Image (cartoon, rainbow, N blue to C red; front, side, top):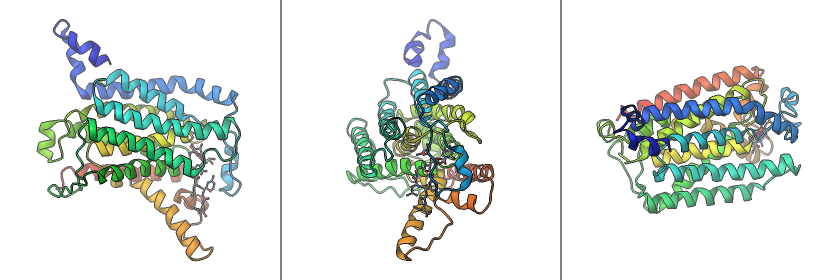
Length: 359
Ligand code: 57M
């Protein structure tokens, strides 16, 4: 919004020229979201406490988790609010990609909010049923994607990391593929959100990586030089990614071990959906398997555990899935699991950026 209001005045005030630069606006979106979530954090946490939005801890989990009982959850409202305000403030609000990605992000936040609200505030033990949650996610992602294809001319060809000339066109099947990416990412981040800071750290790292991808894809010269698909206007998503990084860091301040607040589905579902939709719009969909490799491994550990359990009639591969619980039960202290998983996320992010050059 500041771009739309202030940049046109630059012939009169030369200094306003700076608003045209995506790098400047992305950095300030990150700082704005960080400051908002940092300063509003204590107020939001105390409000959640008064509303008694405290986490129930399942008895069958690692024993070390029992002491977390009553930690306020639904802290995702802090992340979602900060990201939205910072994006609207610093992005070009005439850009259709910004609005459609925000739609998918906020739609998933609403689904997570309803689920958490039913469970935490209304004290219904189950919240939304898994089927209702999934259908709502598919609807939101599908509507956003269909609008992207129709109104923003979203390219329905896939980009395959390491192969610059191999770009199969999926046509309308791209809609199904895109839904799979967005809903899959949303649920994988949700599964990862089981230790303090375990989800928000790697989400911020992945968002920083997609900031680079969005910037490159939206810049005709860089896209041409690095031979990645050029998507006019998609650079504005660098501002959104900057806001995700900033809000993530601000939230981590309070979610770092020992956590004062959890994000709840209100945070985990939209964060994953945001990464999925940015991956689709920047035409770096498959790179998400590398950037978000940690989330993929967490989700695979559950699929393998459940599948093997059923086939073998009661035997397990891991001590407990998702895989972070396996390491906890092996005796690794929680902060060790968290920091080691962050290190892996950073390595994967670097590897994915290298795909820009290795073609
Ligand atoms: C979300 N939620 C956390 C918090 C967070 C199919 C099955 C594998 C599903 C899976 C599952 O339900 N995953 C979804 C995981 C929960 O955190 C809340 O949920 C929000 C995210 N949606 O924001 O509000 C607990 O995680 C811990 N936590 C932290 N710090 C954080 O910053 O310590 C969360 C955030 C919190 C807290 O303890 O209560 C969760 O884990 O429930 N289910 C599981 O993950 C369960 N695994 C399991 O049953 N494994 C089985 C089979 C079915 C695969 C097996 O291995 O045999 C574990 N969940 C729990 N305890 N709570 C089992 C142990």
